[in-house]
Length: 262
Image 1: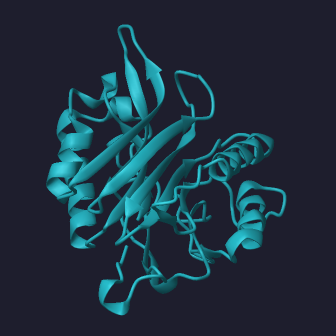
Image 2: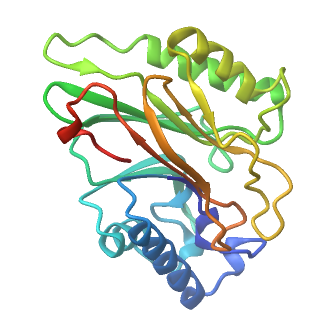
């Protein structure tokens, strides 16, 4: 599942105006959603590690505990000290063993910076499933293309490991771009991934933003063509201004008895 949780503010316009009680209620509801849907990997964007507007809530710890995830990884893309400290970015929650992970902010801004997380998850034997949790700039098409290229360069530079077999990566997140424009980030990435492993894009037509009356799709999951997809759902919920995208799929390399659903 990929989900921009908007700092836990729900449908509020600004998280700084969200009361401590409402914030805790929203975070608990997001955890309940992940638990109810039996999510194995949750990629969240706009989640806080420690920011002045979240009233001391241990957001990562609360989500991990209430949703029942063994592992929680935090990728901070914005960090600021002072009287109003900030620390937020992307996060990955999973019930699969984590082999390694990294976080790559696109810049050094202390507010509004975007970036991506990369993690390798163990799925049986020597096989590793790479996951990319991506959040792109919302203002500039040119900047989004540059950010996609930086992410692709990171993937190309991954060192080969003789004792491990990497499956093609799953790429997901908030792209701040619709699927159709050929000169924007989604199609730019899609062309590159098609050349590599014949990727599929989900969802194709469903809209994810804004959640109360979705008018456009900007949240996506890219899956390799060799994976077996059983379902894709845009979950109708008002826990954020985005709707989450849930995809069930099977990896292609394991025996049927060992296939893992995500």
